[in-house]
Length: 224
Figure 1: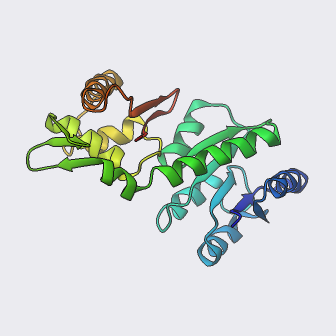
Figure 2: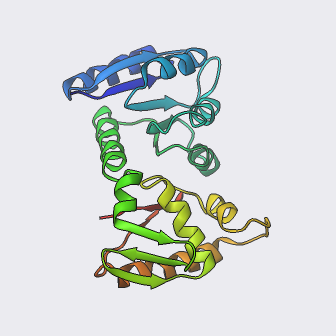
């Protein structure tokens, strides 16, 4: 069964070009060129993946990404002509799974969509919970038959990543999930906790690196 992809792009020629490439790879593309038409279509048709441009007439891509995340975990790839780091992170903080900067090759877009779909299919929550078991009473994580104790901060950090495996979390998002008192914590503190957590997970999984760094964005959980 082929996957359905929603292409939200106001440049009609570009949208047509992308649709043609996706058809060649057995995707079923649907195009929307105006932001105000997106939410109702997504709710009615439940696409497999969404390619979402940021600059749109009507509702912009940032707003749409945030609103879609209120009712769906469909993989979303943000498309933008802006290269400013803030724009990239803003999309990711709202729940995007990846971002693509214009200009791009249609072949690259197809490859990136396939990669996001592979992650979303492979790292479902059920699959992760079957492999990684978290015990909040003892602050212990188990992998196969091996256990290791975590600090309370490490446990909350891992629990955040486990809830949405494969999704990129910014450092700011992880800080908010780890500390309920809204204390100010710098990026180095998060990186330090990640480093220690990585080592502990590697100790019980024969050296496998389950937490990936995504340059300029944050971290995501990848469970074998």
